[in-house]
Length: 351
Image (cartoon, rainbow, N blue to C red; front, side, top):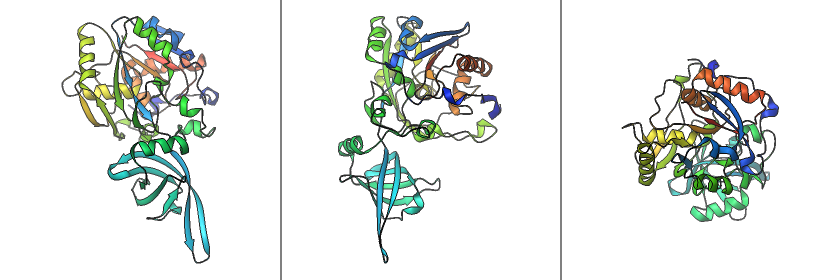
């Protein structure tokens, strides 16, 4: 297995910078052993059965990208610098791991002011060039202020094309998001709206919620030629006792377990590693799924189209087979599906 096995050519104009509306109007490529079917997300009930269960990631994305001013007094007068901060992960005591750009312009102990209400003090640096910031707000006060002062931390391939704006506060959040902690959206979830959820419930498809707080590491590229040497980032997740029991009951009755998004899949497969069945779980996971992985609980996967040479293209290759994914993605490019976070979706059924 080599990194080049997971490469493919993607025209730049297929990278989506805005989602379609309504959400469920996005296209859906249904791929099984029998071939590919072109449909739309609103057609999902056609491809599921009564008794199937969708596993939804209910993490909520923080508007964690902030722009602030670092002020400094000097013998020649006062000096200021514009500083860009992306909050990555909370630590105890109001401390956050963060990306600070440019970090070289901030000294330890200095304060960055983002608004009249929100500021952060640099208290340390990590070997990976992230910073430790002490924020002056925590909890609901911080969440409310981020809603006023922060911007959505759009993926690099979108942020390079346009800045985040007020519309992204809605677009880059699923309709069932409820547990704050992610700095990136579980993007397959973005295709669901109230009418689609109602249609699925009416045909007796079940829903179970898990939480995996997606981190910025989800966008890290694989740089080693042997992907098995790649080190995954860890993300905190939780599978409740209720969800574990619902999944067990669905499998016992012959229904299929269909995680919505690679984050939900990674979490339930983490929770099933010890015994082969999903158990309650609340801890970080750094599971890395690539060809050769044994799936314990996933019967199909709804997911967006992923970056070349990424851990996520390796995950879907593990589920469907590397050659099969290569054919599926070739079909998607030929039929001009929209790629990545704001793009179209696929339903992958390994059979």
